[in-house]
Image 1 (cartoon, chains in turn purple, brown):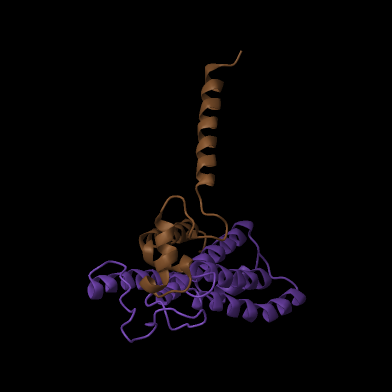
Image 2 (spheres, rainbow over the protein chains, first blue to last red):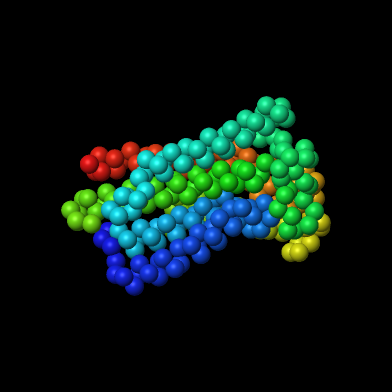
Length: 156
Length: 94
């Protein structure tokens, strides 16, 4: 997939941070508004796919190695399972919501729709799953685009 | 005229359609979550999701708290898909 014209690159540069912020908002407010880790991660990954389409797979592969994306995905998966095991450690149940009502972060019980400091361990799981989905989907897209480019024998 | 296979197919079509109609008639009335014909799991979730999980979003509380194992399996599926794709295309990178 070769790089596209200057117009497409400029529009992508303008749109990329907006889409990125929207995706991160969906992830961070997963316990308040519709959405969550999977949906926000898909939004951010599609923003990265837009950059990939505009700039070409070789340029993107120079900037972000898929090795690092695999690392981020593993960190998200380990964070998710680790939070579940922390529930086993502190609350004697796997997937126990151990932060709820303890006075630490995210510890309030949710009354009022805009209180972000609620829901215990759910926002942290949203962050973990969001990181995992961002890195996983973008790794798939990047590797497939790069391999298609190689198979066609294109230069960039 | 009609083969045995067609008769069996029509029979199962009618049975499954009847089950769908029964399921549609026994759901909540639209906009009235308290009027349930059959008391079910959803009543419990709608009533207690704020006090039990602390989350305002009932869908997130179901996905990450009540059915956390489902999300764990989903994340595992995604992990396996990514690992498979990277493994498949690794040879073409060099």
